[in-house]
Image (tube, rainbow, N blue to C red; front, side):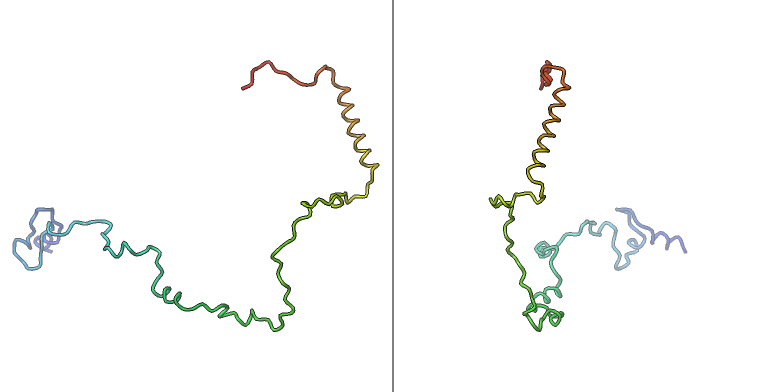
Length: 148
């Protein structure tokens, strides 16, 4: 390559005139005449009005068609004999906990009154055993440090 071809291919500094401009060749411009680079490119007014998640034209056409329920699987959903279908319960009865029926709260274990008296006696015996081991007049601890 020649030096002249190398100089004409190299980038020019702003304000510097290239060899092609000096010679007056048609179709060449100075680097200063180019428009300024702006990023991001400015939008046109109708682009601002478009929703960013707007569906495509094909999807819009598809949504304009009337909906047909079970279009592809209709034969699988039909029943020949609808007497076999059990109705689905949507209203459930209230729980029995809210009732005031005393018989509902009776124990399911057949223990009788003897077991209840035995449990109360064991609890009282444990309390008496603990009280016999207490050597102070008052089992509560009282602090003189001020609490916050």
